[in-house]
Image (cartoon, rainbow, N blue to C red; front, top):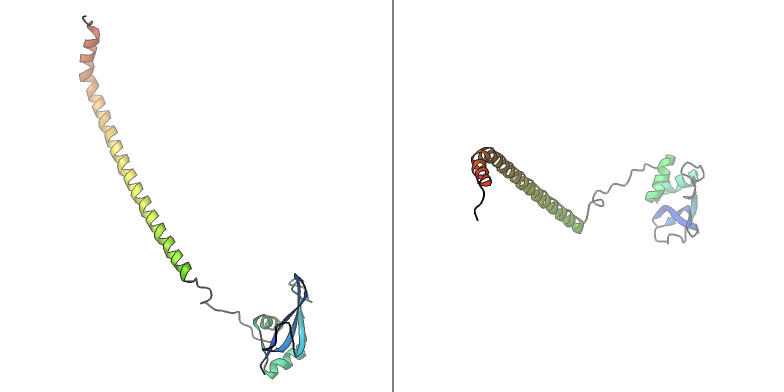
Length: 164
């Protein structure tokens, strides 16, 4: 018979209280258990001494008999120095799924296209500005040269009265 040291939930709705029990792996979570070896009250502050209570002798006896703790109970036992607990590390679980990868690629492509369009727009704006500056310079040059030549005929036309 495989035995686990695990949590059995008790307490009221939204006010959990757990017993740490040695139970057959086939038994329901809150059902039949072999022996109670501790308690866990998550409603207490983390630094409170009564948050996790363990009967060290019973836990040690069950570990010697081959009982395996669940991850949460292993964390409690590790804090008490009775079990070497290593944080769970499943790098595959943290990876995004297929659809998420597709969305990421799609966003990358859109961002690249947007960046390319913005770069083209900036280049076009810069070229338009250069052309406008060149046209303005040319207009200024033309304006400097043109008023001297054209101003005389216009002035002469204004001075002579028009015949009717």
